[in-house]
Length: 218
Image (cartoon, rainbow, N blue to C red; front, side, top):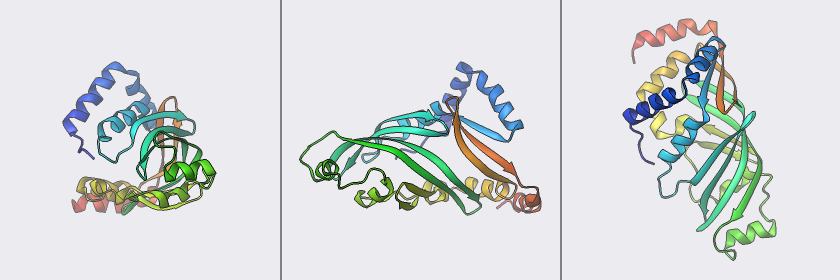
């Protein structure tokens, strides 16, 4: 996975705000309601920029499907290219200093075989041996389990984003979590108006721990 250049990301963010000045007012309204909104255009941009790896999904499409997201992508499974589409909903969120766990439900999974129709994976799909209503069970077919994936069963997936090395080893991220996690929790993650909104909740009882973490400077 290519490493994002912060200067390039900032330049694109600036250009986006110039073209969409309404985002500034939306961000201010969101801040008053403890809500952080991320334009889905930003997710599309990151998917394009960071999807250059040999094993990375190709031709990624991301759309709002309130309260979740609908995705479509092309992946390689057992040497056979597949086009998958599905909806994903965030149902559990637990942000702590040592973990960022997200519980996801995947629905409406559809898979089309783009390659050899006589391949083993095509045979499994065509025979109905693979239950698409339980996509979590398909993890066993992956040649390599994603670092962030800590559990998958039926239509449920549990991720810990800090298992991704680029996040888990980042000192800035670690310090931000130590300061923010005691005083800010996450209530929900929902899509609305082509935005992915993170709904926060204040935790006044954690102020002392947050101040201590900020003063430690570690």
